[in-house]
Length: 341
Image 1: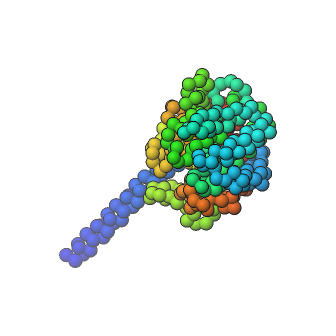
Image 2: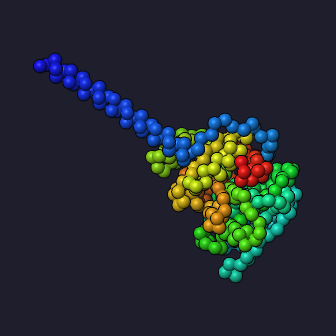
Image 3: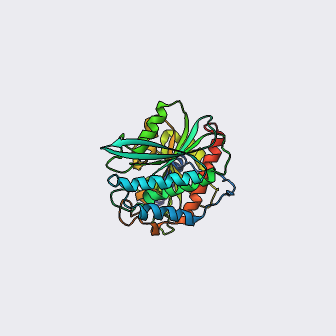
């Protein structure tokens, strides 16, 4: 009788071990499936880009926007105009055809600055970044970094033969109190595009691309799922799109990955989740266009987001320069066959 009980216990123990193993395997498959679906890992990578950017130039642009033209919110129209002039002058120096989109809000005139490169044929690519900042904050990462990247991208594109039109757009009035309204500069640009005959292959929003850290725990991941899928070090650049943009995000990622040694991660998520719509690309979605955001993940990494500590001294200009090169490779690669890769 005792022997039978021992045999029964051994069998139960084995069954429990098999059951635990099966559950662990199932959990592993769920995590793997989530990783494949949301993060879209890519095998292989591009050759390193032949392009390079002087990181000191990026720093100079960030200092100009975050210090010389500070503050640059909607109440300081003169400073916003100085920013617009600065950006337009650099676009011209890079060889762009420069135009402005002006509009009035509450009796003040605000300006989007547009630099055009390439041939006026086929669907265009738009790369944009907002140059205003939140309240009285310096806004070095948010979003002088994106504008600095836009300016240096202009100089790379000015030396490139492009088969289609590429528009670089520096937007005004992205920040509150106008965020989410029709007075956002990007809304005005997207609406004007929808009312014209020009097609849009893709819009890329540069939203905070300058803050990096190799410290463990420097990258916040607000859900258990994200903790399993993404690293805890803020040393990568992200590409963000909706769930139905998996192909678009994958194409952008394919061109960026390996072009420089900054790791590239991506996220496709439902609209409204995790703040995936918290920048200018949202307005192109509103008009049915394909659009993605390139970002260092904003408040999920930079603890000085929308705070006085968002200063030029906190940014990593070396890695930022590599991100701009990665964006350049994405733009030129996609321009060769927009929407058909």
